Image 1: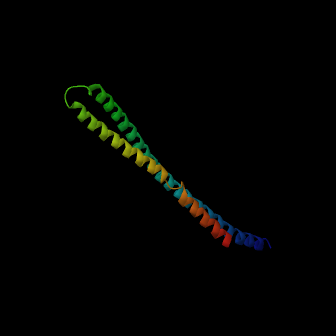
Image 2: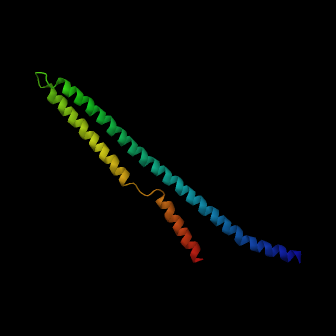
Length: 129
């Protein structure tokens, strides 16, 4: 009789082990997806950070140019027109960078959207069983 009990326990453990194996495989793929989404989010944030820093730097250059423009505005030649042009170019570049950084933040995808979708699919699959 112990032989039959051992066989029935082994038969019961077979499906349990395969189910646990499936669950762990599922968790592994979800963790891999999480890693991919984290890497994508990091790249997006670095791009936005770079554009924000460029906007700040160019804005500061515009302010320095404006200061120089005011200092020489009363000189007797056309030097101030050249400085005014440089100031306008820097200010426009700063505005473009700032607008692109703002757009990048507003158009950001939902964090871990793909992972959440996969978990929802998994939940639906387990409900159907």
